[in-house]
Length: 304
Image 1 (cartoon, rainbow, N blue to C red):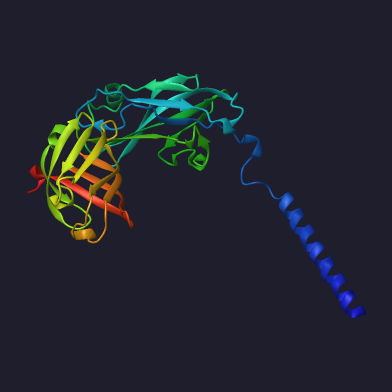
Image 2 (image 1 turned 45 degrees about the horizontal axis):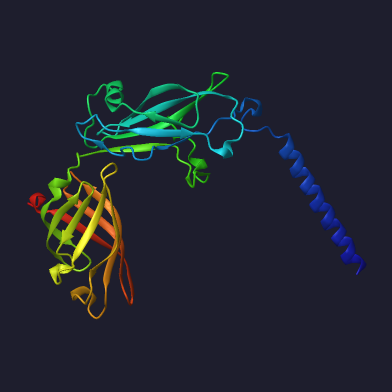
């Protein structure tokens, strides 16, 4: 018993000595960077302003483009900030990315900033958007000592990605706003015969325009009953689509035989270039759900 206790004392002494050695080495070792040169930056949130346009149209420079910038409450003190800059990050059709400061000396937060797309494109030596381009907006933070914390560089890409876990006004923190270039959207061009590829088959249907932001697809569920109508709400500023939950067939159809009240609810996109509407969402019946199902609507004029 005495021998065991003696051995335990040696083990404890060895562990304590080893721990102290590691601690001493760790404290003596220099950091991989000079701690006195570390800068405290300022995190700036940027989002697309409500009800403003979210897509650029090829060949068009007019529109309502606006972003909102603010400093999240999690930032705390930002007295070291002198001013912010609105930085445009432009990716051309070949994938080359460059940047330009579009708005300088931003000192008021929160703030809505209107964007002149014609002026933005002039800064990059172009006249108007072209299909395949992507335009981003982010912010630079210029500190009072003259140091600039860039929102994007060609070497480090976008900054502040680590802060996307922060909550700002009930949503996730945003470090940039993205504007893809798409074909100009005219809902009239989607009116008429279409080919509908749904959860079971491909068949013909008809699109009717009911308002400036609404379309109806007549002949859903292969036109087996008169209430086979799907109502779509289009956000023309973002080229996105919403389908509120609605019954498209009260009785059984070929792909859901033996069930009642076939209903569909979805979100999706409308592509003016390809003439397609793509939807995805839950397909349900009174008896349960078939999970998320995709529906693709194609203008017949685009089918070769």
